Image (cartoon, rainbow, N blue to C red; front, side):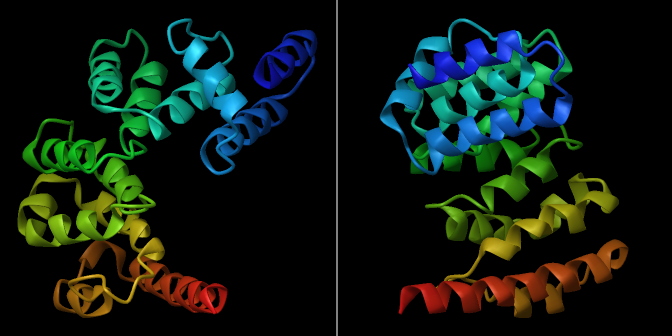
Length: 214
């Protein structure tokens, strides 16, 4: 299979640097999630139960399986994060939770993130990923803003601006509440410049989305 060939190449490249390995992982992830290559997806599912020694390939496998995963796979991924024996494996599976396509899985993740089920040092960064969800980003924004006081009280103050990097992908005119208005009414003292940059990038992305839609 295509992934197996890439993996064999990986095994033979003893002198390969970290950047090359990371790039290979990113390309595999893109092939399985953006391009949705069925062979790559099938190979990732085969490897789901055989953890890979190479971190970049292992991350790609988890991301691809999650992007095509159902409720049972979500529960499995959540349990793998909970019982991981290394912080790297834990983070890999936590990040993957934000990739699952189902509305119920996204709702469950949002509840865990905002209800204290996931550590406050991890939750803001996972919320950033959910705000970029290809299907459910508007729902994530609505849920976050509905529970804004709860979130900002629970999360480290220096993480809020980084969490809000996720608003860059909120390009839909239908997003509620209005992103600019909400953040103007709810300033974040420890991140004004960063948030201004996020909002500027969001407008660039909105203009690009509008051009691509015509």
